[in-house]
Image (cartoon, rainbow, N blue to C red):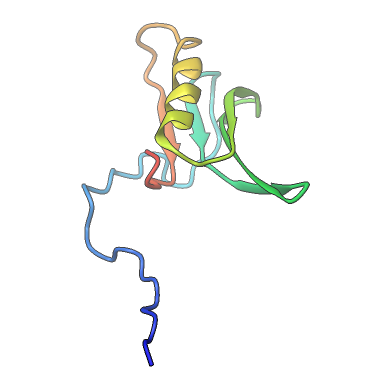
Length: 103
C-alpha cells in the first residue's frame, strides 16, 4: 500500500516581517494617508475569483482594484500600478497589507 503524503505548507521563514506601522489604528486624518489591501477569494457561479482592492481608510473609497481567476503577483502588480498612479509625489502614505505571498 502506498500512502499519500499530507500537504504541508512551508513553515520556515521567508523574507522578513515588516513593521506594523498602522498598529490597529484604522482612522485616517486625511485622504491618501492610510491605505489597506488584501486578496480575498470569492466563489461565483462555481468559479473562484480573487479580488485585489486598495481601500483608503479616510473615507472608505476604493482607490483601485484588480480581479483575476488566479491569485498571483501580476494581479497585485496591476492593482498597485493603478493605485500609485493616483498618488501625488511625496505624501507619507502607509500601505497596510497582510504580508501574504502575493506581496
